[in-house]
Length: 533
Image (tube, rainbow, N blue to C red; front, side):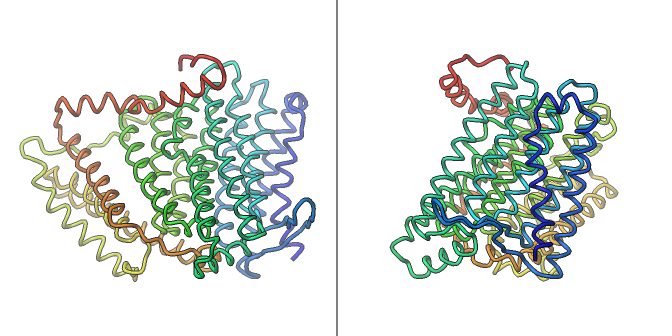
């Protein structure tokens, strides 16, 4: 048991301790910082592999390492299960890749040592957040992660817009901290403990008994949902994400592939608490769907590669929050893993985007002589048959899966788009290739879902979560939103250029001006005018 605990807690402890290294010393001894960073992160990744092996052989770990009684009873320790194992492997692997990239990216900079110090501290804080045994440790690690990220965002302190964007992020993060602190206070009031295992069990019993504290527990879930929204850039807390693009590329990669997932991890880990509040679940579903649609539309109009990736991240996090709101936690975890790996690669390779643009440009063109919409019914029928057949062959019981109706509808829309573009070329070769690609994508998604569902089957927080029951108006609203976006995309791809579409393009390119109130509030708080980006 002691070895098990040390394998888990030692790497994040060493990484967090790097934050105590003086910045000047780190800059003077940059070679030591480079070697130390790579060694520590390699140790963290190997420790994650070893801990996962111990999880398979010995089972989950829930152990208190330090016990305190003042001012309140608190058990500091490690909570490690299959959910934590997936996230630990993901973050330690991505962190190692980003650190290796940073060594060459910042070669020759006078402040590289300081940069590596804060990278290590931030990664250690994220790992501690994943391994936290109670809400106090989780909140402390949450705040430490925000502190480390803020220092990374102002790495180029001579750039006014970089500092301004970091200050905007700072304000939104403090708001998220207040939400979590409020949830902490209510958790102690309702349960008298912060430990996950005790809180999860008590929340389930209170919900079943409809006790007097049920309403307070529901408010706790709502506060946790708001906290997750601030970290994962959900509307209306999204405005900081596209503006933090003047930071070094490794920071963008870490932020978009790792830290921004903390909101989703919070909801999945604390699902027994969050799911006690139907309002919180519907809030996550509606705001997640809106953020996904908003980010997806704005992304298509951006001329900057990094801003386009930022809005893409916003859209993906919105879809992940929609999955959490529907109670589809396995699908949400799959989304986190897939998006993290993709977005880490996308940012680290963003410098070569223009060089490869000509090689990767799509060769699929819609038929100019015929109306491409005549292929739409055939594409829709093919998508329904394809997805339904693969789901049946994979043994997925759609009737008993949370959110299966809405997520299946969105999957059919996505497959319809791919197949429609292939059929509209009037080329049998391209049509066959498009249908084959759609089938392969659907099969991979279903296989990944089954894998995550199996991994999370033994996770206590998932088993104790209350089923999500979306109201009919919310379900209809989400479906209509995604259907409208699909129709809009089809109209744009068909070559139709109406004045309304052109006007929509201009508004979308400016993010529908939703960041203006946030800029004014930031200027009001800091007492300085907004600099030019």
